[in-house]
Image (cartoon, rainbow, N blue to C red; front, side):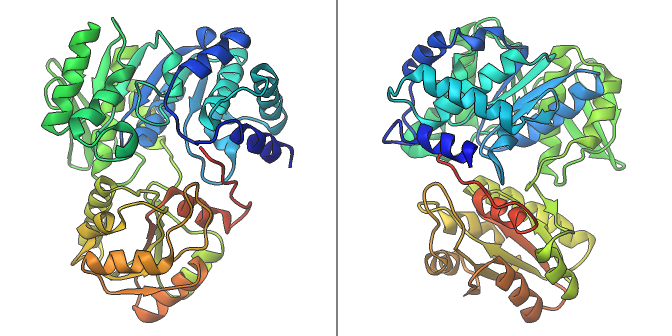
Length: 435
């Protein structure tokens, strides 16, 4: 229990789990000897959706080029160690605990958010472990995110921006995109994924102010599928590549942005070609074939899928992907959903109206903000136009789906915490922490 205990102590250093500022972390990093200034060549990624998938593509392509790669992502699904990958492997317990204890000692009980504390620990580990590359994912926003103390990344990437965390980032796409664009640095190239016009213009303004050159999706690069191949294009370049290793048409744009970053880094076409189909990212259109939930589904003749998407834009993308699967093989779609408290469950589920035959809502999983009750989630689903029932838990919900619908396609979705809970049923219990 040493790591959970250390994480719990760090979580108690600040009354709010989110308090966007860089001053507290800079004070701490100074006490630690500024490890953020001794990191490998860094790819800094912000955005609302697609950050994790983009990181997975970049990791696979950099490793195909022979590089040793660190990765920092959040949140985790089952174990906190997932957030910190050192030279291709999840951080070991002993090293993680030692870094957390160094942060705790250097901080000396002063106010500090959980994410600031754990980011400082990650910087210690990244700075003291040899590697060629660091893929650094923003936690929330960008401008005031703890990861934004890195002053000189090699390249930045802004994935699609949509409405999320409005209480912290602003109530318009323009404001949210402006916060995300805070990672743009003077003289550092920035790749920009597909954006609504308001978001794109906010990012362009931020790049102009920073004196950074941006590479825009559909203006400077693009990608599309042709004859079951991925075609990547720039003005004077065309690459014929295998399809991405992550499922769904939305992954074409995520892969394109990652390839554009790889081009900025000077990676070869061969490294991109080799890495692209080998990208893996848990709980992103993941087919579950092992464990007790998969056993229940298999006995009922069902396909079982898992996705951690939880905001309205993710709902639109996931509905599109499920429609694509339906066009390949007809099966009746059943959604098993759980949401963190405060989420707009109705907006997430609205794109599935007319596509899903049934929504089964669950609670009983641990989430940072607390889990929405199954009854409240069911009411939100009804407002979105769905036939709904509730179940006591995931196992019961999968069982119900198989008995109410013949040979269904079952998708567990609505929360990364629910996704972590689903994965944990096949092994270790999920470790839910404030960040």
